[in-house]
Image 1 (cartoon, rainbow over the protein chains, first blue to last red):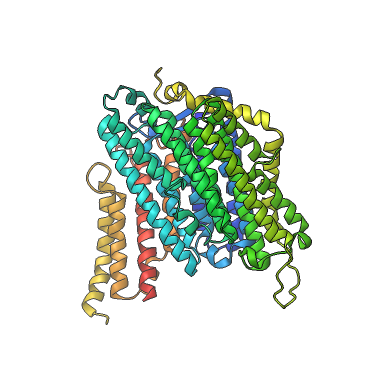
Image 2 (image 1 turned 90 degrees about the vertical axis):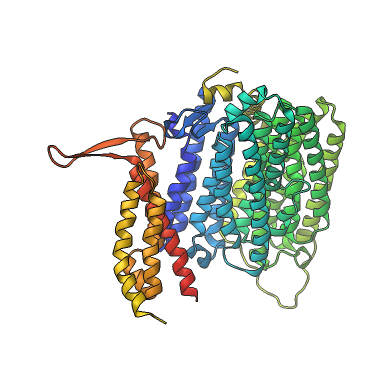
Length: 497
Length: 138
């Protein structure tokens, strides 16, 4: 049943429509939205199973044949990313139950959330570079509104930066697309991969590759285009900033991996060195900036940048093992980073502030929360046997195999600095005695709906860490499909490379 | 200031706008026109009405919640694309039907028509939601 492939896009759209039509019944909204995300998870698992048994699947939308129409392609990498997206959708939906106020809900929080999921799934599934631009826009439009929904002053300020820089990056991407289409005459990714090898002039191709790199780099927040991220991600409600932190930058990384493994493969010596430089500098600058921060979510935002560096590092090394490590790191990071943002939201719920200096005494008062924090935090720093350790281990092993010692050393140093940041949060938030404010407020208890997604994501981090081998085998096959695009091209165009 | 001329013009032009918008919508199948431009025309009629009278009167005239129009339009477009999956073709493939009205009169109907009607409703809904809320804010 090939027809299943477009459904991760259609299903969130359908959910959003139903939510829009039932906007008046506020109590129903959250349950419809949650049901939609669960259905999305089921469908993505079905698609994954189908690709496992039958190889890469492609659907020509509207039955227009491949280089002319829009193609929706699902390989293992896309399928894994869609499953992760659906899990994030479920977690954020549950978290929104009690953390999103009725006012935001009335202005369409849940339809927008599903619009965001649709855009993300679309970007993961499309096999057409222009269509990718469209999904970026769908995703960004929803995220623009989610960013400023509620209309607080800080949100507006963050929102303006976020909108401006992202529109700018879309414009750059579009100009790159124009040049690419003028040179090669096709927008279908598989067709591009096929025809790009016959292009006589590689200079123009490098220009396009750099335009794409800047556009995706802004969206993924890599060095030196990351400044918008810590300026905006700490402003919206916790649920929103958690899904942004988890998913949106990774769509940029996904697009980078897809384009630089599928069709920008002519002048690899130039692009790979550049990507490695960007990776190293992103890791270092992110982690060093994070070390100076005392606002919980700003600190975590800077860490996103340094973690993106690891994902790009795998792409720069570009061996099969390195790409698998990249994907591993993306998945591990989506779970762990979102979880930390959710915990920051719980802390804010309990104490009304994100400022680490004003917080303290959590280990005494909330020991379970402390345990839940340790799992994603240690995972992020790369402590065995959690998922982050394996992700970094694979990347570093790949780096050693290719004798890229500099990037390996940087990755190891950044790992230690990450541990320093996590220890700082631990010391400030959990160990330090609570700064006395004079009034003895009774201890609040966090709502169950805030803790359920935290437990769910922490559980996934542990499971990936313990049962690494079957998981890693799947990723190796996904990397195999990315390194050898012959199967991808065959699935879309029906020709042999 | 509510001008009498504008009010009478708006009241009489609204049906005209709506008729023309449907004509443009149907014409769009094989000639310039279509759901987007038709939707703009229909919305223009209601916006003129809201300027001539006020937003409340225009909302009553519309008789639907503008947000529900967006939802209904999207749903119609989505369903028009899903039909081809039911028939075993990829999503959004064009499907044709013949509608027999009498023994010698029949119409050929295709799914893009329903897609376009969906676009029409979405455009009307989006424009009116935006314009009505801006006008109410003054």
